[in-house]
Length: 174
Image (tube, rainbow, N blue to C red; front, side):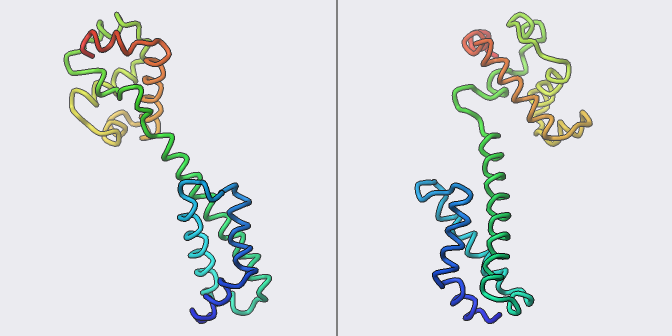
């Protein structure tokens, strides 16, 4: 489809209703912090669909129907990605494991604090602190997935938070 014709199709009232209908279906409202970004993504996906050769042979209703499905799938993938990304950020109230445990922290001191850490968690901390490795390198050395390392670090943070050990950890210079 000619780009000029595609823009005319997108700017029609029916297509506008389709684009904003997808956003409404995903419960994206104008007060969402990334609302305009999602609107732009929907426009681009719809435009790219209209540029495909098979789109010009379909009726406008069929074009909008297939465009709706493509926009929905694309935006739901973006939302899932954004939610996962937000979950992996530090909370801010709990310091990172690197801030809590230093090279000088022996295992007996961790035991004294009452941290019920597994052997794998201790190895992860040791690689991160002693060698200054990143999570990917630690995962390769331990033969696990990077997500496993992230999950273990999250578990360590939860243990610290659950046992309210932040003050004690700071006292011990961990």
